Length: 349
Image (tube, rainbow, N blue to C red; front, side, top):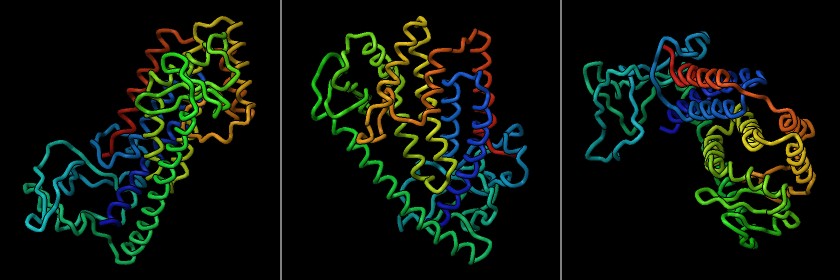
């Protein structure tokens, strides 16, 4: 069973890699708003955790060649996300046939649905405890079984590290002093941060006056993160990456998602600012970017943190010289997102 699960997840990772590559190409168009790019990264994350989806003729995977065009069709295999427990008294689960052309990616092509789990197009599908895939050779099964254990151990370690990081991210709250609303001051942080998932709190470092112009800008930045539930989105992305820890494209996705999220919030905060206010905002970014905040875990949203000079330069440039988007540009962004959803979240026929 573990080998079958890893085989399906590996196919999900391959499909997700194709989606990540497509987003990377779209990201090259600097005219596209960062909020749209963040939405496209969200589609790539959905693809990474999508074991099955609808097969349509306009799917992107219809144009990628045979490498990622093989699928399990619904007549062969079907999987439900919430299955009742399999017991000795009930050795299989009967799933009704569906008219929806749902399929599962089989880009690797080393396995096929087990005969025990396939009764026929007019019959129910049976999913047994022994596994739902049959490998072409015993060697292939043994290889996938070995790698499946390595993957499982890596995923457990990654999730354990994520839990530790989350616990560490809450440590500055112990020394935090309430100011107003959801704004606190903590000597344990060197840069403004948003901490927490469901009731996130803004922590300000010592020396930053919340009533100053820079302080109000910082708080506005973190409040947008809070309203958009960016900490929850960030956590969900990290959990998904933990299951795809072996895929370097997944880590590229996470790194660029966090970067684009910050630029999207910068744009939202400063879109109505004057040129002078933009300079104040950029100065605040530079101020906290040079602070030695490496002792703080990278699990929460920092207003600004020590990045490569090129990354900080891009953020400051985007703030000082913002792009203006018309109603036509907004409509074009919606059309791109809709088209990307249809192309990336579907399987080939």
